[in-house]
Image (tube, rainbow over all chains, first blue to last red; front, side, top):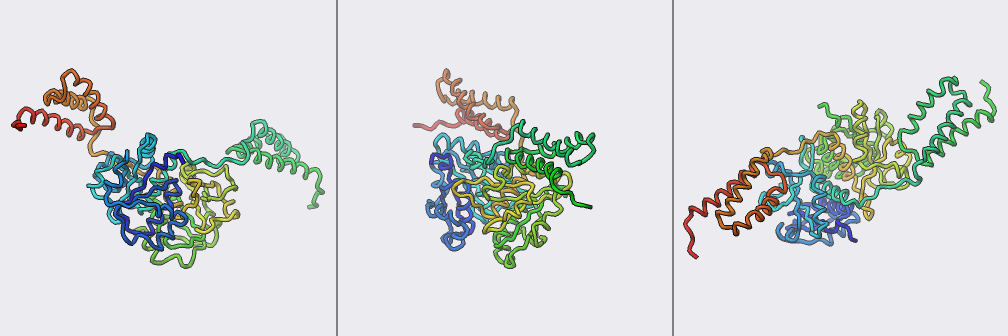
Length: 248
Length: 248
């Protein structure tokens, strides 16, 4: 795989809880990341909680690297992005994950590993570690509740890297959009149908058609959509002319 | 609070696990959302796991509404956005959270509640529920691992609503950016310092200054930044002239 995402490394500093670590593994796989480095992790990290939350992403944990210090974890990295909620330090230089992602990917593009570093659950990283950052990331949160769960923080940053990498292809419609011609043919069929089913006095039909046109062309219509609408109009006309009337 | 976010409702259909529900409460508070509706939740939802993961966001759970069906949960809503990983249904109409957010907020702006609906952990929602959606949301994930944890899915959608609401104010720098004039004064001080400390032959100074200029003006410099750099230059000159020389 030649993806830029292979150059992105998630670094967790002194992680404490297995459940969070499992969720982190899963969030990484959701975002196309596989490279996990733990700095001095809790010895109790691995267990049932971690396995349960990681689901089928447990390989990410199994393939982790463990080191003793942040310095070791990021030594070879061209960019070191640290996520912190700390106020006052580097305040104005903190970027949102969305702002930082393109710049970090451009470092990966030039062949250098990029570290995304996250502190421990209880009190984040110290200033002596934060000072090592080339990019300080601050995740936008509501001012009334700014403290993010560790795995949620990893997810939000990893997700922005994934989106910025351009690797996601949005699902395409099964059928292409209908052509102008086909849409107009469907609309004039409906105009005839309004007449045939005596929907309203004939002189009001153009006005009603403006309403129907507005409703039916609000979003994109696929060929299949137009076929369904065309069929409904035709069948209404057919039913009005051919089905036996029901006595009142 | 007159925030548009008060019109946004998180609807969880048949949620199963307390830990996820606690994480959802916290993710909601992080995103400025407080309105939680549970459709036919598991009777075992509330417990230690939920309290632990919710942290200080437990009020969101305590103030929840419980109803029996999706219809009841979304009856008064002007827009009903459902998040699903299901392929094949409405494929081409599915929007990313980022694409859907402005449209959903514009419904809230016109005074109607908006529901963001999420299915149960094990198999998501059925087609009979998905068909009620006005907006189908699909969260971008890596094709090799598309299955998102429920609380992570809620976070990603809620976070985009929060960002689109414009309620987040990014941290401002303590001091304003330095003026052009002040930056240039600092740079010419460095030029004099290069001469005073005999950094290189005088004829090479203009070239070196181009390099230093490139380094120091790569990002935005605040007034404080320029003061630090100016002080360094001046002190180097002073030290070169006034401190006793150390014999080799």
